[in-house]
Length: 355
Image: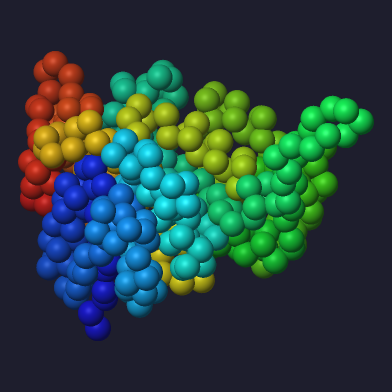
């Protein structure tokens, strides 16, 4: 049966990198005997220009009906002056809400060929393979908040961290399922020594983990986890944590590889999965053919793995990327003397040839 992929190029370099990823998906489909159908829709600044809103109803409906969504990037200075309620970034939040996406998966892999780009010593980061699972729709970002109020003549503001047992249960269960497909090690990150919400998180994680006897669950305070990601990242397999802590830790971990252009992500939940690189739209280099498409290509591999259940096809893309990098091919963001500089299109062609 044919699987439908909605492609949302977005803004800036979005069109270039999603075209590269679609090219790789088509080659992969031919090799692994998959039937993929592609349908392009607009969101972000491009949709504002065409429809006056960042997320048209037609894009939302197409995404709901699809088997997966591949997104480029949204935003740019062109739309800095639009009204706050129609900023391009609203498209991302709108898609997450419309599709019921509550989990963000961010893998951090550093092949030996890229270890020298890391700010850490090569021996610390070479061949690390960590998956961070971040809860996406709860916690302090969505709790009660007050911008400013006077209490005894002193101005105060607050944000409330709230989690329920069902919210924690579903994200921990998803992380357990991911861990059992990897090395079977799961670290739940919280601040249970001082936060009531974290104590509920830890209790619930322990209960859920009882249903996954093949997964070894441990706990770590967020401050220690942040330190250990810099000192000994190879000790981690899967990390699961709250919205706030996951936001911070996943950005820290993204630095380990030395280039944000290499990092993919997946947002999963009750509906269609959304797959995108973590970098922005880079409008300063749009149209120049020098953007790094690998983050988007690896997002396409995640699409095959998590939405279509095609593990062999996903691994085939990841192996092809590693092989091309091992041969010294680099886009502008990673180029150094003695290596082989490529354009966006050339990098996609090389990866395609290695699948």
